[in-house]
Length: 294
Image (cartoon, rainbow, N blue to C red; front, side, top):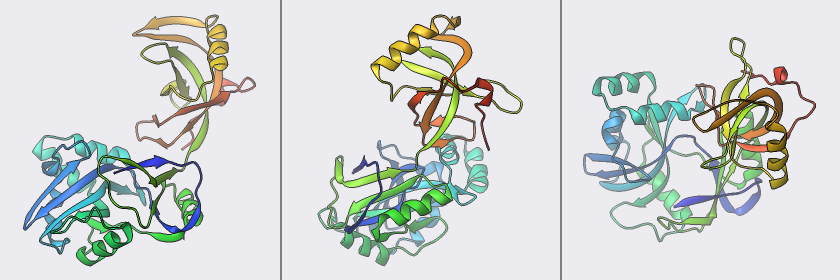
């Protein structure tokens, strides 16, 4: 079951709110002492996370199917890059080493099965059932929740630098494979001023934007594909043709003289911006003022 996007946080006595964790959506299946973990695309990733061996002790039901977010915590935040790295490993020695360096935690937010099908039960009932069968540990725990006060929780996640919040109607049933308007995500977006380094026309128009670092100038940090008005795109292309330098691999590079503001969700450890959209040109901004700030 998938979330819809909502722009603003809200308060509502009919909703349960929780932090939005930044990792991979993982479904954990337990049968007796057997544990398996699957991505939302159905890929079995059990062997990539040796921590799962301890999960059987944290699930007090003989059988269960749990809906989770697999995350790696660093400095009080879930770091997408860390879990992504863990999920891409295949060498057994590296898997063991990284399990120690970047241990995974599986944050449970729903239960689909505990010996009987629970998907037709309301969310409040499923949450109560979760609390009954989970013995929290460093590897498996139930997500924190608040009722009514979504706005206050959103502000708290902003202060902590978290991704945002999730809002779910307390009576919602679980509908696998659907995107429900009774489940919403409200994200903590950020903005930054960038230098336009080039653009591509295919497969979709996008600006290549960069930032200045202490040791590297005009380093590309994102491809911006969304948020343009047709007239903004036309105006840019008219100006950009006067700044062309070289073209390679489908990208037309230009002199770094134009700036724009972009909105993004997160900065990765490799200095890239995730989930980026265009917010407007900055005609009075100097390119050297567009800096990556730690």
